[in-house]
Length: 433
Image 1 (cartoon, rainbow, N blue to C red):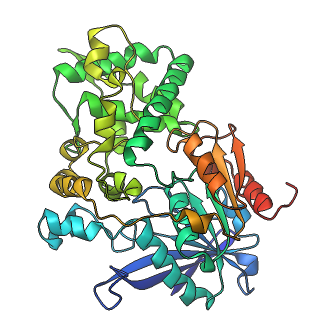
Image 2: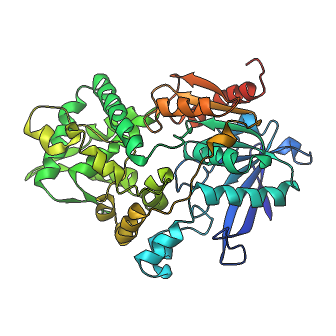
């Protein structure tokens, strides 16, 4: 282990060896990395552990500097473990480069099937026993991390002391179709709110989409920017300041040259950074698999369900005078054609979409009888996780206490500093805020 300091904290690197397939503990092993964070003034104390599960899927734990955001509150009483979930960050990363060594697309899909919430939680249990000597720990799950925490409650509650979930209560038995059928109207509301705030962006967005319809645009990274790819910038609209970021992107979209209007270099550079999955390819490859259980394939659910909402079709909007609708947290087959980081994984993604042997993720009976203190922040009109689905799940988990708020968007725990975590700790312990 290596320890080092940042302002106010001591950091320690941990690397754990875990089975790729937990049903075959003696088989292939992979590494899982985690960063321990302790307040500098409390390093010698016997503090309880809190493990943080990042949103995603496929996203490494945030790299904090000192005690940013919620971490300032957490290190007051916990020894915090920031986990790079398997396949992300420093945890035996999975991407087009490493997966090529696995063989053909079938072998790659079979391999990636071991990178869902169920495997992540089993990693957590091995790590917990090694770090705590068997004592239960607290869990903070953001977004997909909340999905993992809910699975944790379903399968290994003996490892839990208390659970805090922010924007991450999943539908317990909804198919991916149900998730996206609820998502598109939410996304449309977010787009309408953006255009209410920035009405000038209506024509700007239409102009960009029209240009992309008439001109083949390849970004400096090799990303093929199509109208559908441009629309996917709506992913920004689910965060607290995302609408403003989208507006600033659009206002610099074009420059006038000797041959007419062209997409500006600055616009292309910024868009490439937002659209590329080079840093988190598992987000795209396993996104719909987050909802897969019950013997049904996801079968590119977001793509299929989008056909039920023709207002999202760019060509239809441009043929008339309707505003262009951006899309949100949806993954489509074209992602694996436009993005150089994903192109080699197209057939692999198809096989994952066709897969039917996914294990169940949640146990309603066990959740209904849990005695673990659980508190969840549910954001009033969360673009990424359906509020109605979250509240239905909250009612299914015995004793779970919710804080429903429209003060924050989906990234509230990141944006609020200590307030969201403070509120959840108080709720779980039945204390006055």
